[in-house]
Amino acid sequence: MIIKHMAEEIYKPRGVDPDKYVCHRCSNSSKRYFYKYYSEFHGTDVVYCLKCVNIGRSDSVTPLRVVRASPKPEPCRYHLGFELSPAQKSASDKIIEALEANKNLLLYAVTGAGKTEITFEAISLARQRGLNVAFVSPRIDVIKEVYLRLTDAFREVDIELLYSGVKVEFEHRFTVCTVHQLYNYIDHFDLIIVDETDAFPMPADSQLMNAVTRAASGKSTIVLMTATPDRKMIDFVGHENVVSLTRRYHGHDLAIPKVVWQSVTKDIRRQRLPKKLERLIDDIIRADRRVLVFLPEISLMEKLYPLVAEKFPDSDSVYSGDEERAAKVEDMRNDRTKVLLTTTILERGVTFKGLDVIVVNAEMFNTDSLVQICGRVGRKTDDPTGNIWLMAGHNTGHIRQTIRIIKNFNAGKTTI
Amino acid sequence: MICLYCHRKVKEEADIITMFKPAEPLCRECRRKLSVWREGRRCGFCHRLMEESWQVCPDCSFLSENYRRPGKIMCMMDYSGEVKMLFHRYKFTKDAALMEVISMFLKCSFGEYDMSIPIPVSPARMEERGYNQTSMVLGAAKVPYRDVLVTDKAGRQSELGKSARMNGPNPFDFKADFDSGTLSGKQILVVDDIYTTGITVHQALERLYTENPAAVDVLTFSKA
Image (cartoon, rainbow over all chains, first blue to last red; front, side, top):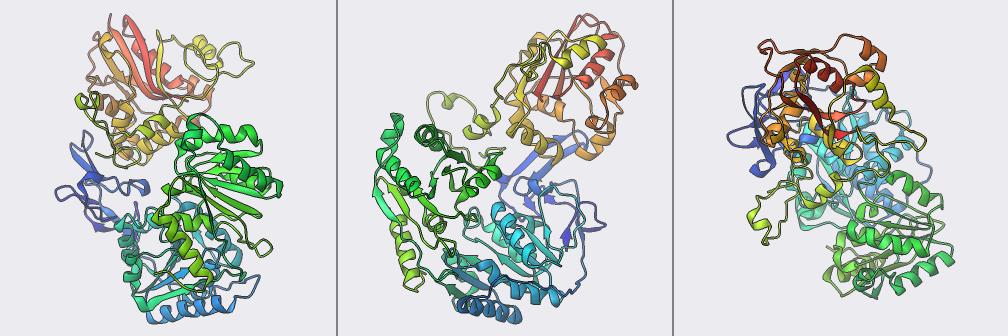
């Protein structure tokens, strides 16, 4: 079933139970995330859910309506420009086995393993049988990137990219969307692939995982993909259903981060560009490479950026709310920008050639983020490695764990 | 307490000032984002951003030729970037809670006026949205207001050309139960949510001026 505003069939007489404070669409039951106001128009109080208001308001005065979609098989051919490596092929077979057995699976794969391509065979098979497929991620940037890769491979297939607020008629058979959009599906998808399962806010919001399971049909397969699985993900699929890929598709080792013990706080307060940072950036530019400088907070970025821009004119800065975000990333790709300051927004889903990475205040990042950030480097076959510098005022468990995970991957071991 | 804009928990450090102030459902970061005004020279009357070559504001000179103008126009937010998003969510995804957020940006001496009159919404809009976005904000700010106008304009204003709107009939009328004479000699404040070209508000003013108020000013939550 798909929850839809103007549909005929009523699923629940109202979206929100105003006495118990429960949202029937997203299952939110935390009173803090409801808003109540008196509506003159309705002549009564209205309670609505703040958790899912972005995908259309669920409230106490409007019924939730649904449409049902009938299965429809299609040939669903795809083509890849390359052949899967033996490790990729074996992971792909595991997903197909899971699909046949209606089991869930965790694909624990190093950054740059070619995860997306590994799912193609299972997707194709599922669609040929008329099963509904969803490819989801908590991050909209990841979703857009995945959508491009899917449409490039599945050229004759209709793939639907869902955005909030788009009012187009969809078929809901092969859907690409954020996890939040799954609130609109009940018992519908037979194969759900969750990319970057560890990305914010998935781990912190158990409701999102509930959305995935509710959107899944009775006989379904959920594939979780991540480079840093946590206990909950492993428990969700079961230990025996974890498939790991410790090598990148090009076969080279991951670059191991180098730690630079240097706090930048004092320099930035005195409006000076930290010397070590300047030297690192200078070396990178001299080597004709480019660099992403990761910062834990926008406020820090705003202070540091003018200092960097003064010394290095080919620099720019980007954050989540930046309206020119796409253009700035494009400038970096086209080599117009050499130094790009960024928040964690670019920790995933981006690939640049000849890239090095610097993390400022690395002690403030968690392991999931650091592993992803390190994974930005050396993603291309013709540029399979690079430099990663973590600038930290002091050591943390997260930094140690990051280095351990990466060394383990290179040794062919997983870290669970 | 959560921030009604980003839905994150509001961290309020307890100090001598916050202790005696009621906590606000808007975090500091969101307040900063929503307080941004685009740089540049602005029209002294309607606050429109002026292009370099302009001597006078084209909107204001057009309106002055065709309408009687208000005493002044007060404007609280710059309708661009994050503020645009705020109004989009408030008006089109029906996130009514944002009335509280907008009400926090109202810096206006309502007490100087005898009456605050919100611009009405059409019955079709009311059916769709369930509220008048302007009066809801006034309500949230605890400002008493009087609904004296009704409107039948259904289409999106932006879809109509300037002259089509100018030459058509005035879309505003007095409510059926309006007593003629209540506005006469009064200080009136007309309140609207977004001021773009100003035609809408001036059409409402045209109606109100027929009742001989002493003065009419305009308060708009944001200026496009």
